[in-house]
Image 1 (cartoon, rainbow, N blue to C red):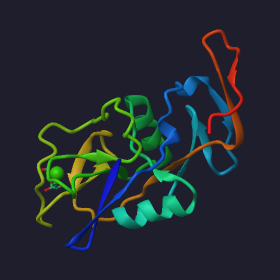
Image 2: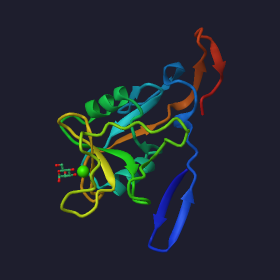
Image 3: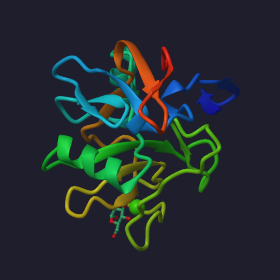
Length: 179
Ligand code: MAN
Ligand code: CA
């Protein structure tokens, strides 16, 4: 479930069907990514070319049939950082709806939300008044809450191209699709 506040009065709930968070471990999902998308785990990843605001980055990813990535592990966090070398990167989580309540794209699967806060963060500080979005800090890959109007690169995450399949513990075909 992902809440999206529209204007000041209307509140709209969008339920994102989130096949990226299927219960199948990524290592057992097999499929293809087309260049320049990079395959990692069970998905395809691509960094935006230029820094964008949080909303613009989210929109850019959605126009590509992807979602802005919100890492679920230290390994995925490191991978995102490696794609956007030398830059800070958005994490697709916001507490705009309720201060202190972070809601992340693709974390509606009840498995809890991975976080990697820098010590002292999130502090909702900064000169902009409120910090309702999150970036991965280039220097140490730790997270800092930051104003959503700032501009950073984002990494988009999408499903494999075309058909894909999953294998079981024994490496045998489990189902004929992971969509
Ligand atoms: C700045 C901003 C904040 C951050 C502090 C940490 O004010 O980047 O988001 O929390 O520095 O000192
Ligand atoms: Ca902060």
